[in-house]
Amino acid sequence: MTLFPSLSLHRLLLIGSALFLANMAHANEQSTNAIEARIAPVGKVCIKRQSCQQDAVATPVANVAPAKEYTGRAGEKIYNTYCIACHSTGAAGAPRVGNIKEWQPHIAKGMDTLLKDAIKGVGAMPPRGICSNCTDEELKHTIQYMIDKSQ
Ligand code: HEC
Image 1 (cartoon, rainbow, N blue to C red):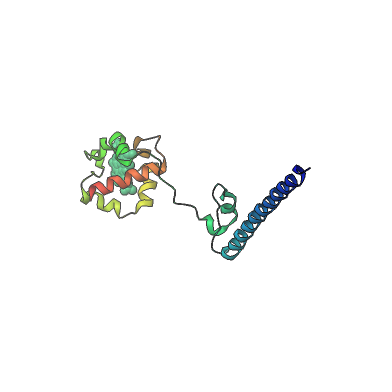
Image 2 (cartoon, rainbow, N blue to C red):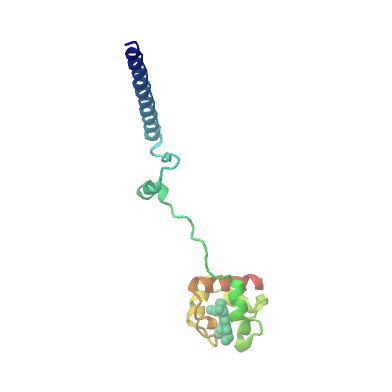
């Protein structure tokens, strides 16, 4: 008989601490919500292990796309494979890489025109400078490389 009251006391303590913990968690959640509400216009609180991805899409402020990274081949590599044949020798009147005088009138046209010309071909230069599998972006990087090497 003496066991019963002590058991129930034990239970009470257990229930008590469970309630206390639940209350703590609740209070913690409430204060997080309060903080979130206060800083909401500026940013979002991202709790560890809780994905903020959805919020990023929904919140225009966090929706600034990062600059796209270049994933194509290096301009130097493409130049050495395809363009070098004409652009190192000046074959058919190609402006030679390393010769700023020959490049000057071309550079003056601006990158947009140079890229357009390189894509569709210009004068004696075949379309894409014979690099048929080069993307526009890769051609742009290659032209930039050639210009940089000519300065
Ligand atoms: C078969 C020879 C040949 C090859 C290969 C070649 N080019 Fe050319 N390229 C030329 C010639 C010739 C010109 C000068 C065209 C003109 O101004 O009449 C030229 C001009 C250019 C210009 C200047 C265009 C302008 O609008 O002034 C760029 C840029 C260029 N080439 C990029 C490249 C790139 C990049 C490659 C390689 C992917 C390449 N070329 C491969 C012959 C070539």
